[in-house]
Amino acid sequence: MKNKYVKILDLSFIAEDKKTILDLINKRVDNNEKTFVITANAEIAMYARENKDYLELAKTAHYIVADGIGVVKGAKILDEYIPERVPGIELMTDMLEYANNNDKKVYFYGAKPEVIDKMVEVLKVKYSNLNIVGYHHGYHDDSDNSIMNYILNLEPDYVFVAKGCPLQDKWIQKVMKKANKGVFMGVGGSFDVISGHVKRAPEFWRKLNLEWLYRVLSNPQRVGRYIALPKFVLEVMKDRRKS
Image (cartoon, rainbow, N blue to C red):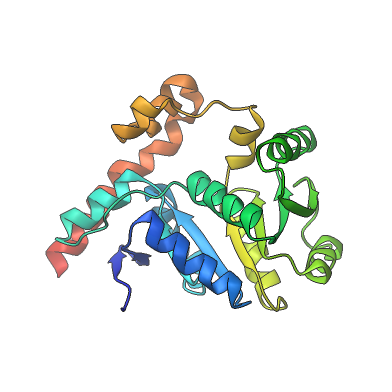
């Protein structure tokens, strides 16, 4: 069965639920196919519209996942349908569960040294069979290819990169050109959450699709990032009128 996609602003989002997306990705892992996944919210969609270099990079991804309720609502404005928001951190932990149960190799790259050290410690307790073949903090000059070459030599099945957009996606695009296999996915601040350095919104807030508001209330300095949301809605409405 052919998968559904929805174009919002300039990005083509996969319009499937989390389970379907996860099954698609894990099947590619089992077939040793290399896969580039971008988890994008309204802010990233606006960044792609305003930065053509990043837009061209995003077009090379195999899947762009709607990590943000704004994207889901944007689809509705366009009379399209995305069944649910798929948070990158949840997609990542579901992949780790699969890796743990199916003897897949995992590598982590990004975040501060103390964050990634603690995260690996937490994951080793949670997933007793998880084959973590390596990890490295994100305070590394990506023009130095030593980490990239080291990872490529390990041939992990999953590589999770936490360096923020657009840095993580630029690095992944470069690695993808040389990789023979593996899922490469940027996960933003997920390492901080898993390590316990940052608290994720309680389930009550997540069920109401208000995780973004919880972040703002917890850290008012983040409010500037959410200015992109009304701009995103206006751009989507412009596109609707054009169509």
